[in-house]
Image: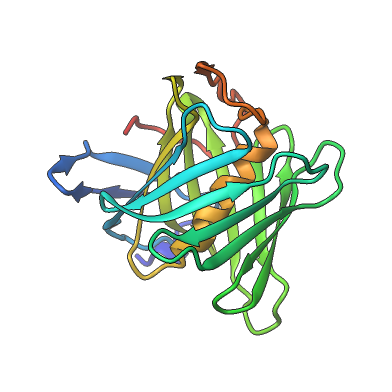
Length: 229
């Protein structure tokens, strides 16, 4: 029976994840709908770390344990702007701009390498889910970002799981820490931009990082996350 023929029940893919001698236990993640689901192996490991005791927002982005990008944001701005730069030459490769908003997330993610804009916005405030859609008519991909209890998150592209990860609950002498795995053929810069949108929207990072940070996470979720990492 093809996956597309399954109309009831949860669709589950089992993922064995390995990276740089890190072995993750078997994880089962249901699809958000009863649509098609690919069995994929996530092979790229990304770590986003906020610089400790910093004014403004400063992050380091590592891919497979190698520092690739830095992220800066000015302090004195009404609406936050983030600049993702190459670690070696400071070339800006991605920007994240916060749009005027009340309760829902509204951001523009711009890939400077392709000159494509993406609108990141809230899908469901109560269920902690988000959309990310391109404003370019040639890119009709639909990205969805889901938050889960225990500080987990998953990212889907056209209803296929492409990435998942977690966020640290408690940090000392540093800001937030994000870890996620994804397939190596996806636009990882866009996914980094989504993480920055979430981090800014949740407001866990103040303009001045505190010595101790505690993240409460969420209770409600649109799709179930059934196992711990």
